[in-house]
Structures are given as C-alpha cells and as structure tokens.
Length: 67
Image (tube, rainbow, N blue to C red; front, side):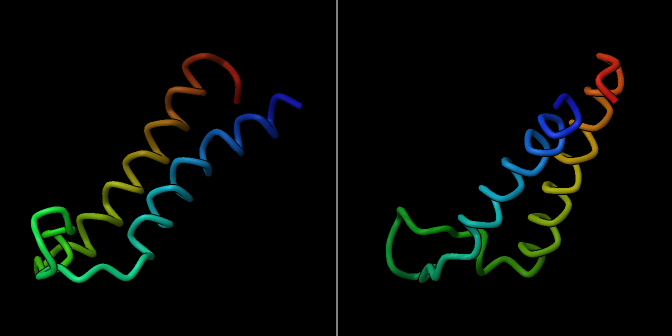
C-alpha cells in the first residue's frame, strides 16, 4: 500500500502540470493567458520542471525511507 501511495503521490502533480499545459491557450488573448507558451524554450522549461518535481519527490521519499 505504501508503494502505491508513493507512485500516486509522484504522478499526481505531474498529471496536473501536463493537464494545464495540454489545454489550448492563445498567448495573445490577454494578460491572463500563459505568456510562456510563446517562449522558444517554454516546452523544454516545462519538461525540465516536471522532471525536477518527479526526481525531487523520489529523493524526498527515499530520505523518508518510503522507497
């Protein structure tokens, strides 16, 4: 049960970020749209952030001896 909790705890934030960036936003629609979508490195920055979140959570769970 602990392993399933760890796996879901790692993938839920990644799913949330992928869900937000998977929506169709128009970067020129207004001030509340996502300006990073028109940035040339926006895709790389998003993937790097997701990797950082996943790896950081794995390290945190290993320090707490859940893995």
